[in-house]
Image (cartoon, rainbow, N blue to C red):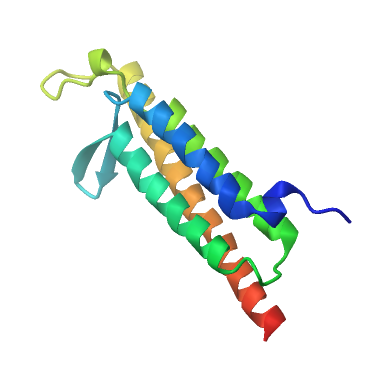
Length: 150
């Protein structure tokens, strides 16, 4: 069976995705996302979120590069790489409020505006949780690589 480029060189695929994510974030650099932790709201710009995602992708790429001589499960590698890139692209390209539609903290929300704001926040947090959950595939793959060669 012939392995695909994603399965044989996942570190290069992840590295190639970083500039694409950075360009998308640069084009949307004035967009912001509200993140609620308990009773505090944080307003984060999309470019800062993209920098965090790119850092995780670079660390992941480094781990794949360091373990390239060990054999893991190719399906696990492909699932992790595609999910990581896909969710990072989703977060940087579809979430956030444009600067001219920023929510005014002194104004009152209509029920429809509040529902739209809440739906966007829930989608963003769901994407972040999915991104973190798919990073467990990397951990599982590294464990498989370690066990197979031992």
